[in-house]
Image (cartoon, rainbow, N blue to C red; front, side):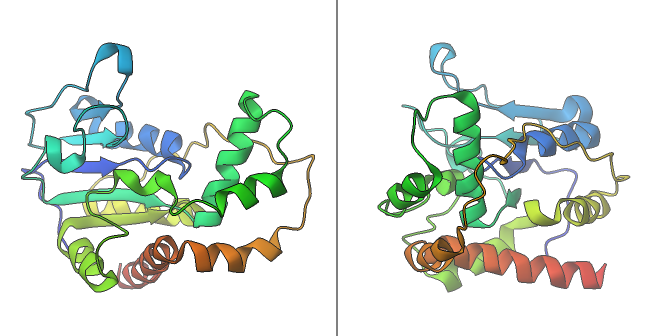
Amino acid sequence: MLQYDADKLLVSIHIPKCGGTSFTTCLKSFFSDRLFLHYPDDPEGPPRKTTARHQACVHGHFYHHQWAIGALDYYPDATQFITMLRDPMEMVLSGYYFRRRLGDLGHVGIHQYLEETLQNPKIFNYLGLPFDLWGSSEEHIQQWLERRFLWIGLTERFAESLQLLALKLGQPTPNIPFENTSPREGELADLAQYRQQFRLRFHREFALYDYASRRLEWELEQS
């Protein structure tokens, strides 16, 4: 597995609805003023690139908008990345309840939302990854991950994942915040019927998640 090099920039990919708000707080604890946030804002233009390298981390969304703002567009020489993943269906559910909390879904129920999601060719949350999840072979992707990803955490195992990252960085484990969570009470629908459909429709996303699960389990056993 990749070893952390404090003299090289660490690039953290924030995939939406994977506990990113809480994880950002943890990164601030690790890197303090050496953490540089990369969050595009249309009125302000593309994010500023950092020239910092030593003990520095850049973290944020690397996709969307009208500019070339992918991680490798900004930092083509980057060789160490981290990210947090989540079960793809749980990611979609989190997105639904987040949008319902904001009030921008109208009367769309959870079943309708899942049915509409299943009509999509891919789960677009993954667009910020520094490789093509849908256009490359699974073997090629896993080799890329082994060479360049220092750490891949799982939202479902947030505490264990964070302890492993702290160990890799040579830092104490910070207190774990839970921020930007959306309650799910009020609609206790049985959604098990959708899980197999999601695995079939979004098999590349699940293959990535399954790889990350196996890798995390192995690394925890070795630590």
